[in-house]
Image (cartoon, rainbow, N blue to C red; front, side, top):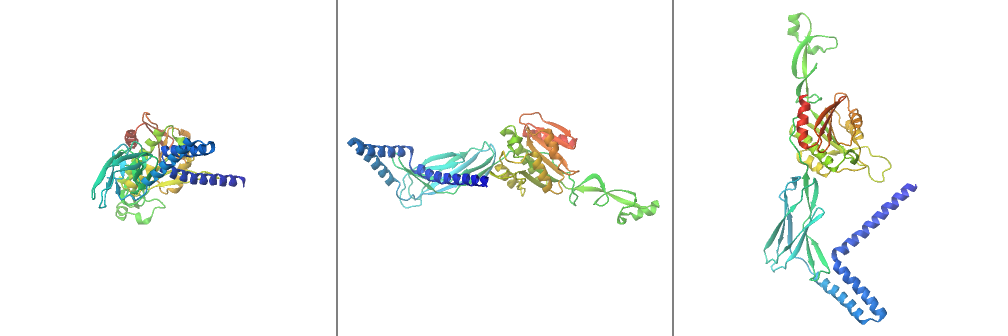
Length: 422
């Protein structure tokens, strides 16, 4: 009961703080630092002047208040501009150029004065001055969005700023809606992964033999338990003993890619970025091969939760764009599930998995990887992709688990090709 009371008190304090912060943000958005200084000087001067009988202080105080009043008049009236925000594309790869364009037009019949335009870009701000525009004219400016890091960058909303000549007050008018720029992780072409363990009519033949499938292999003698429908009567008549058909089992690949979002599984942020790129590369290849694909990531336990949330976050695999969009938003967290728990829940929720990739950082120990692979049923090919920035790529076997260590994204291509050849 005490714990619930404390949690409610903390939440109420945060809500009250957020409300006060919103009011303060509105005031600071209208009154500049110089404006606050003039207000303080005015109030202090008037108080000191009337209390001490200091005429000069009274004059200074009223002068300051008159300046604030005049500055308010500059903010009155409507802005008649038409402002639009555009992006050539809302998806780029990390490191690519992403230009944006702001167009300020004058739809009125009179000439409009110049105005300052501000465009929030993520945590930054792009600003430029639009000149005075005659009727029907427009002005455009191009800005570049920094894409040095993967993520979703909100751009906008565009706002025009009107201010008095002294700079005491400013009025912002929001025009265009904000846009999201998806900065996708870098991907690399990797070998096709077409061998799986789930039989279907569109799979590829393998060396495993079965009594019922579509790829004929050979004939063998009948043994008790074989189905009579598989008896090959012509061969039986020639040999004098029952002969049955054998088939090569066809399989399709159901790939499972599990990405750890636990901050404890990575030594550096660069390792996590490498892991996201490796996950994206594996997923894109599976989608290109039209394979059944499941991509999951660690779920984070909410703050103040009384117990750990054992669940995984499903990453969209509808198409390449949706997959990369979702991977653009993933981030590490202290309360996210680590690799063993992630593997256990992923194995329970992905029936028919044939190949499972566990993607993590160098902070994961071999014992944790063995524990994670043990959650998958027999017959599932488990591959751990350990991202260790700058490390020499290597491939090793730990019981039934294959461990690929990569130092660069390009190492994933070579390591997978080497493993498939082995």
